[in-house]
Every structure is written in C-alpha cells, then in structure tokens.
Length: 177
Image (cartoon, rainbow, N blue to C red; front, side, top):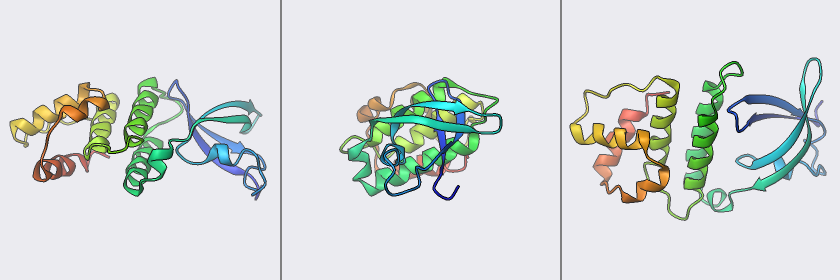
C-alpha cells in the first residue's frame, strides 16, 4: 500500500477515473516517470470488485517546455485542480478533455498568452453551464469573453490587450470556480 500511487486520470471521453498504480511509488518503479503530473499517457486499466488498477502505462507526451516554466506549471496546476474538483464519474464530457489538452498545449508553447488560463476557465464554465453573462463589465470585456468562449486557444495570438485589460478579465473570471 505505501508503495502504491493514487492517480486521477481524465480520459478522452471526459471520464474522471481514480486508479491505483501498484508499486509505482517506489523510486525503482518503471511506471513512475510515465505518471509524472501533466503527462499525456496511454494506459490499460484493470477493474476489480472494489478498485481500478493501472495495469500498463506509456507516456505519449510530457510537455517539456511547460515543465521548464514555473508560471506555466502554476497555471496548468490551477486548471487541473479545478477540473478534478468539478468533474464527476456520473457526468463525463469529452469537451473537458479536449479543453484540458488544448490548454496544456498552449502552456507548452514558448510564450503563452497571459490570459490562457482565463480563456480555459471561461470555456470550462460554459461547458458546465455555469458561465454568467458578466453584464456588469464594459462591452469590450464582454466581447472578449464571448471570443474566449468560442475560439481555440491558438487564436489568443490575435488578441492584443494591455496589463489593465488583462487584470480586469482575470478579476472577472477568478470567482467562477
């Protein structure tokens, strides 16, 4: 038990699966590196009566650029924590996996946009049906939020904002979750 790892997996169908990786907690484990946080993995699972076990695992992508940037790591961890807290086994949604992967790819770029996390959170709130109308914001900010809701994160490069505008959007979004 003390050599096992508890791992949360979000699969392509949007299913959040809590699994046990037997023996992966030991330094000599071959599976340990594959299970590093923020890795895209391919795995097989074994379903027992009471638990789900990780049988085989292979790292497909480890997002090296992201992991070398402390701000990108922090932003990605925030997103992953919010997704973990707000996804439930009885309500899977493949769009959440797609959003997570899109955002991680965005943070894996050399210079991610400062509003990448906010864009992801707006999209997540929209998927979950909890996105408010932000009526109290000026029109330009409401238009930016509408843009975030429907656009791919790669389109953030077209968005030019100053620090004050970034801060206004960040404040508006910070209380969504």
